[in-house]
Amino acid sequence: MASHRLVDSYGRVADDLRISVTDRCNFRCIYCMPAEGLKWLAREDILRYEEIVRLARIFVERYGVRTIRITGGEPLVRVKLEELIGMINAIDPTLDITMTTNGVLLRQKALALRDAGLKRINISLDTLHMDTFKDMARSDAFDRVMDGITAAREAGLWPIKLNMVVMKGHNDGEVVDFARLAHSEGYEVRFIEFMPLDGDNIWTNEQVVPSRRIQEQIEDQFPLEPVVDTRPGPATRYRFADGAVGGVGFISSVSQAFCTTCNRVRLTAEGGLRTCLFSLHETPLRDLMRSGVSDDHLGSVIEAAIWRKEEGHLINKPGFIKPAKSMSQIGG
Ligand code: SAM
Ligand code: SF4
Image: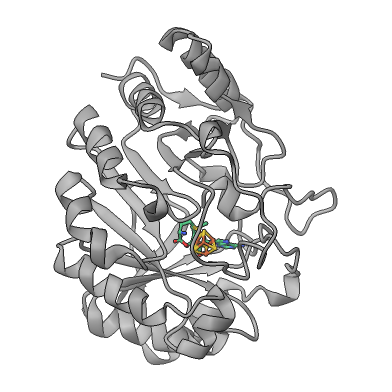
């Protein structure tokens, strides 16, 4: 039972923990990583599974965290990830353990992940065309990703959310096709605004397609009804008005920031606690853990870091500073 919640100085409660298990990736998405030159963390600098589980246990048992999302980099490039899922599941089998993946290794991994206790999955898919896939992911694994989505479904990892980062001039012509896919196949497609967290420093506001525009295009063909969530999340969610299974969601981090209700906290692969995607500083926990401190000590460091959580990000406002780390190094 949680002794208390992780509250920040603006009254928000952090109960959604995102754990990055690696900074490495087998893709080089243009909105996330540079084509080359990103230096990987050394193996010994990355948290071991036992260290991740120790922190997860503190978040769950002391602070009532109920949702743990595994991310990266590409989480499935980390060896035996299903073992980590099993270890986290053993803390409390009712935990909502989810993962965000590019899907390319799911044919090999989906069943083992489900058996280990993974409850839900988000798969990133930005396009339904091989050539656009090559342009955006800088990989030719389009067919494997599509097959990975099928494998996840066959394994019973359902419902599946598909994450699409919409970039003007790349894939913005496909948003209605994605809504059609959601409508016919029962997926929830989440349209994500391109955020200034790319490794190539190509972000400009002009490339962001505001969620409002996407929604208008979709509603011309597929009328939508809002979903009222009991727990506020980053996505504004809609179901299809005609009752079809599936739906769409919009993550409008740039055009309509959701900072006032943000309940997220992130752990980077090297054990840095980040209270915001756009934080300019992290609270390093790895060396503290390795120096032998108690859970009480770690807890007090975590509580103090959460208390200092930023009021919100400053994208599009004077004073915005892009974090030095790319999305793959933070954990999206
Ligand atoms: N490799 C996995 C994947 O791609 O799903 C997990 C890590 S990835 C960093 C997590 C999510 O962040 C993905 O859905 C990806 O599309 C999204 N993402 C990465 N860079 C982004 C950016 N600059 N703006 C918006 N979303 C981004
Ligand atoms: Fe890799 Fe995911 Fe970043 Fe694409 S978005 S480069 S798949 S970490």
